[in-house]
Image 1 (spheres, helix red, strand yellow):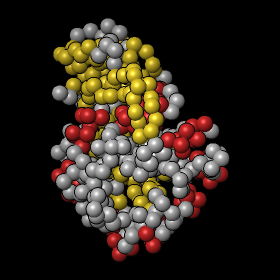
Image 2 (cartoon, helix red, strand yellow; image 1 turned 90 degrees about the vertical axis):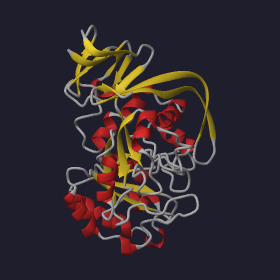
Image 3 (spheres, one colour; image 1 turned 120 degrees about the vertical axis):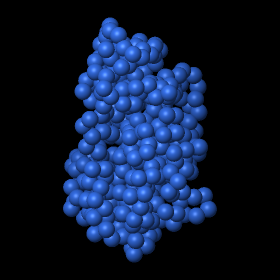
Image 4 (spheres, one colour; image 1 turned 180 degrees about the vertical axis):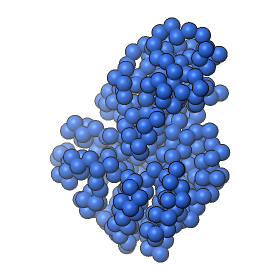
Length: 374
């Protein structure tokens, strides 16, 4: 007998090419069966009129709750957003990764996958009134400390995070990125690079990213936008995609613009991953959550299946997680139950530009480890 069956929903699993009315069954914490008339189960949930997807993966979050000012409560966010896997984008560094692990990651019900920040203290001063870029002071940047922490937590850490730009690295410029590049190569892990206002400039950052590395905030508005004034994509951005750099949205408080996104999509340049960059200053707007970020792309004309792809299988591949991102039997028993609401919905980007959409995704339920999360 199965533990749980979700019955009557529209199953969208881009990894398997599925978009059809199908039931899904779970047993032993795993996906057990997909089809019709799956038989008996201890718990049967009617999800008619809903969309069932693999558990959403939010590739850019900040969930070191209580240990940093930027962090939000991971389980509260997971339940409201439907994101069963939260990739923490370098909130903790070598000096506090153990605290993040023991006090947040291990007790959480949601799955938290951290990137480690190059900065020893991680993102340590982030609020409405206090804002200090952790990459500004090179005294906090020690590649040896970062590599040692990665090796001590090799079962947990999936990448290296570095933030550069006028706000994040100040006069340190590109030096933090070069140090983080060295650490990622030594550890055999992907590098996730944040870029805000120049300096440094986008072409210099793009040139330092290789196959499997992640450029987050990839559709940011001017300056350091990937789109030229005439709407074409910059040559260095096209070259980076050709060599396998992963482009992640990372919406956040200051890193996503409708005009940039529209220009990129018009050129056929879709993001590889759509993530929220949810944190203490963005969770109450303009981000709110991952479904809202996905809804903005629906308003921009991205097909629903492609939006789901960018928050499931593509996100899983970006961090080398082969056990999730799909509802194929034998994988982790995580699923998101979503409503696709129809109407007129107002969306806002980071520079307060508004867009009206006719569809909005909202979370209506979460399956974690093969059980309904009440």
